[in-house]
Image (cartoon, rainbow over all chains, first blue to last red; front, top):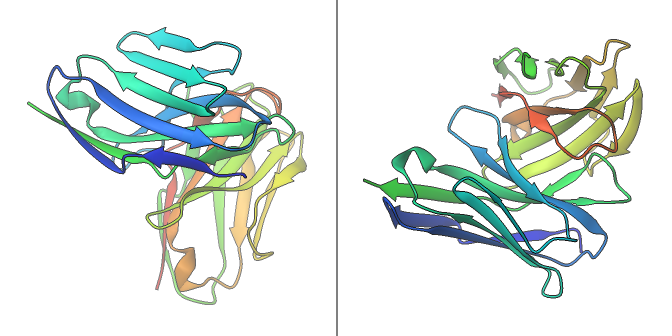
Length: 113
Length: 113
């Protein structure tokens, strides 16, 4: 019940295309859902986050879509660029378990020029 | 504002030894969480400290321990190292235990031979 399932494991997109990464969870106590971007040799960097009281959040080319009833959320990267090539992690936080993030397994995105 | 810093960045140890890793959070942040990242298990929560107190602990053996100092700096210790402890150890800081945004450091790459 503490798991966050992320798909796909890897993704190849052409420059200018839309990259979509999906996550699903079971624990209805999760109340915060961030996405992190990680480049090789670096720590994860917070990209965008959403709470379950909104269905969508957009920041620049990055959009989170949230479906509370389906217990799913996704990251959309519009106009994907080669510089977006990285590993992306979704995560979730249990409201009763402060400070602990449960991470998905990660998606390696490659954007081809 | 300086980000989260971790020292050392790389470490090579042999089985049976112990190791201490250090993390300095972003100035003003009082909560520090530690994560282990491996290719097989992904990002897994180790523990969280706030105001020098351990607030949360992941599912790791007692060989993994940590502490936090009055200036919010944190250390984690792994005793009796095993080959499987080879990983990237990441520290994340946030303003408080209830604050959701966690900012990660670059990590310490530990190799156990």
